[in-house]
Length: 309
Ligand SMILES: [Zn+2]
Ligand SMILES: [Zn+2]
Image 1 (cartoon, rainbow, N blue to C red):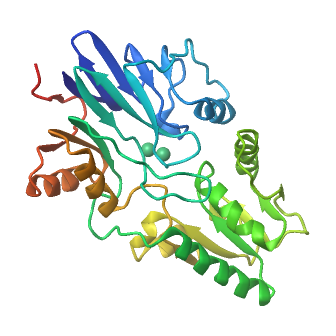
Image 2 (image 1 turned 45 degrees about the horizontal axis):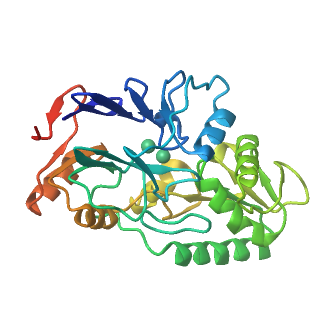
């Protein structure tokens, strides 16, 4: 078998190709509904029901031609990233695990990823450098809650900033403890899909509503005048994040694994071969080689043999 990077990894067995977050395979796996993972007009799409619902809401032209049912060759595993997100385990002479964007941390209504054993691992490395070490999720959220409380007591309006699908719904849980939450439209639409899928979220109202003192928005440009803006991102590990993002303060909260979760995952999977993709792939692959793993960073259009016959 071999692996090729075609936007995202394409697994090629002699008699079967599986595109991980792409549309060029016999089977096309869609791990979750973030834009770089969704391909319109894909055939034989393997995905979760929640991801299909979210993709249809977000991308008006999204249509799949054929839905592939999970069968003995494939397992879709919760990977903790956003609602409905899955890792893929392909069982075809060798076990190949594709993590997609993932985290081991359980947060609110999401269970963290529990990696299975596999001979070949394709792992993301968005935060594949050692200074990306994220503190405990609940501890950071408590800190954020205290900060919001302080600002509200000073009579300030507060805006919480995180991307619309995934981060914003955790921020809804946080904001909901302070009463009505006003949200940007796109976030409101995604909240509705989450609710339809059985996730309990606090009620939201439109931005600018007077009854609300806390907003959840995807970008500081949606903040109302004089609102205190708080960003939530793994990139907050970089000291300059708040300044570069144009927010008053930032909290280190991510839907991705930090460096130490990535390392832990590789050890748990205990693969013979590791392909690293996304973010700091060269750096992370180099680290894994020092640790004794046979690891390479996936390069665009370069064919990588997994050395199996
Ligand atoms: Zn993602
Ligand atoms: Zn991604």
